[in-house]
Image (cartoon, rainbow, N blue to C red):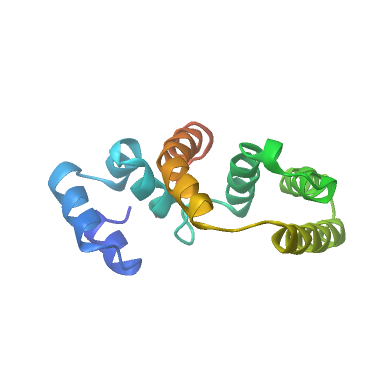
Length: 147
């Protein structure tokens, strides 16, 4: 089992996060259980902590939280394929095709959208709430590997 200090050094943790973890936790399992959402998500996305399947399912789950804002069916179809792929029900080729279609949809949306400071403010306000929901999902659905 890797120590908190070893984990932080291996993944170049920020000083604030490392200090908090060392002062408040004895193991990485305690960090997992008690870290604030943005730190938990940082831990969860370090290489080797979650499986590729868990990471893909997290990404799909997070995207589905804003699926109602996706006007292009290609984006939603890509989520469906990514989820099926994570569950072994879609091929790599299907995933590649869905990814390309979603990328085309995103490019089309970017050209049509009016990106301004209001979008940035809305994103910043929504980020904290989204991170809290994501952290709860990760804690409920993933089993970290701190070997």
